[in-house]
Length: 230
Image 1 (spheres, helix red, strand yellow):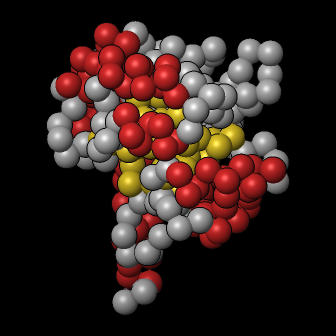
Image 2 (image 1 turned 90 degrees about the vertical axis):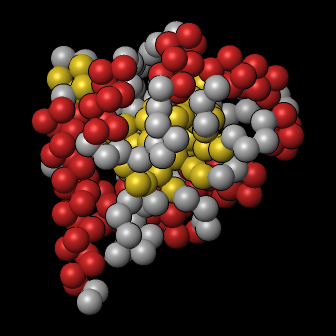
């Protein structure tokens, strides 16, 4: 990441138009819309995802978080919801990224890699040539009830930094980010973008004060780095 350019800000778990309007008014770059998941916060129906994607301004990306693992099911899911970007939160079990590219021209592909240990590095390297970006999160898809996001846990940012240094595609950093730690996270990893859900919520609802603080922390970091390099 060029230190004079601020990381993109993606706010996940958007569940209604009020939250959408709040996030957009505060200047976020992308919205995460969480469809059916085995666990985690912010889950909404496909009809709600479609409605929110339709009302997202063209200047803001809408990300469909899908837990489907076959390309056929993922394609159908995107067609039902019409989000601008697919965020695939689990590993593909059938089909290829090429299948998705062919069926969904113009739709961005973001693959989530859950950073549970050094093996995440090899997983990210394998998928990177086939997607538009990778999101590094703190879930655990190996549990009986899979955790595929929204855990509020921080993972090992040193591993995330190694992944970011090795790949030449955009890297989003997620997992336990808050207004208090996001500057340290950016300083450690230097991601293309940061992604937050629980860190800007109170009692499950988007907290405009926390969101404003989060955005200001990202912007202050950018200003500070820009000043330091002039």
